[in-house]
Image 1 (cartoon, helix red, strand yellow):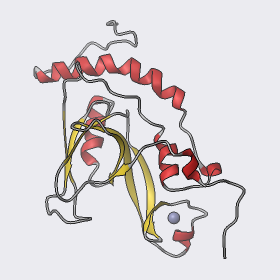
Image 2: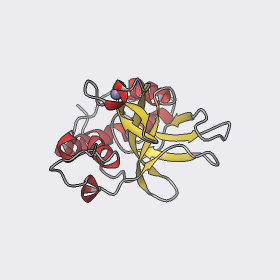
Image 3: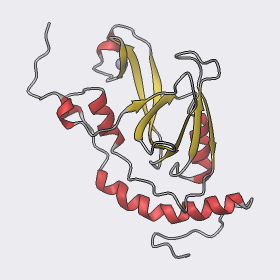
Length: 201
Ligand SMILES: [Zn+2]
């Protein structure tokens, strides 16, 4: 039975962000441009990955298994292409560890590759510090909104996380990260927090 709605197709709102998974033939190397991971339960349903929309989820009703996927925005080092990255929760553990230690993923430089070079083979992610003093990180997209567009959800289902909130947060934290990463390179962490205007408290 066709599903009718009053919403126009979501492609009209395309925010220009492509979704990338770890390729099989080469490692993906990129800098994270958002402060945290975004986790969503998904199904492989109708030949593609779609979000679980429980309790009102067609895939759940059909007993399709669900699993958590992790999303973040990243900037590819070579091409400066700003994109959305998807991996499984298991593959994303290094991001979680980084987040627990540094308090933000902003500026985390990661390499993602598939050691067995098989499509859908396990993904290995390695995170390391990067000197951000000469890197201009772009503002992150509204990831939940950008994913809703990619998943072609109707406009009424798009949940925004507040694009305006993300901008001051980035500006406030960037000097802190710079200092922290530079200190990490010297083998020690920054012990004195830096406040939003870049001056030490
Ligand atoms: Zn579901």
